[in-house]
Each structure stands twice: as C-alpha cells, then as structure tokens.
Image (tube, rainbow, N blue to C red; front, side, top):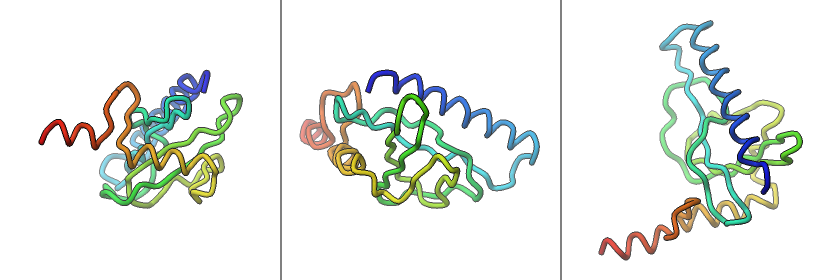
Length: 131
C-alpha cells in the first residue's frame, strides 16, 4: 500500500482543518465531534492508530461493533478504515459506509485479531501474556 500513509495524513489534515473551521464558525458546544477510524494496511494485515475521518453532528457517540468504511483518495486509490464509533457515520461523497467493499472482510478480521501495525502480538497473545 505504497503512499497510503501520505494520503491518510492528507485526509487526516483536511478533516482536522474542517473540525477547526467548524468550531470557529459554529462555536463550541454544538454537539459536533470528530469521527475516527483506523487505516487498514493490507500488506501487513494490521490497523494503524486512530485518525480523524470527518466531523459529524451529535454528541459523543459511544462504542459499537466494528464497522468498515472506505474512502476514495485520488491517486492512493481506496482507503479502508475500521471504526468502533456509533453513528452518525461520515456522509461525504468520498465515503462508502455500506461495508460492501471486498477489502472490508480482511480489515474486519484484522480488527477481530486486535492486530495493530507495529505491534507484533495479536489481542489474544497480549491477553495470554497477561494471564
């Protein structure tokens, strides 16, 4: 997934700018929040650290079951994210929240294993070590 780190950083920077502008224009306390997800790296079958995908209306959403969200990202192709945030989901034209993309299945499997990029142990291995 060459270059996806740069695309993800650009997407994150745009979302952060949108969040700042939203706060500046609308003021604080209006119930908007950053919607985050973890970028899936298919080469290493792992998930990156959380990044902001969008700013959505509503209070803090709480945690839900893992959901796959894809985003068209120009030259980087399609980025695949996993989130545990409850709706509302990002709704921009570049987002697909259907979970129908074929890349969603291995990304959700990586999430179920608890596989974080740069961490050599899965969630099960970390739990077993703590027992």
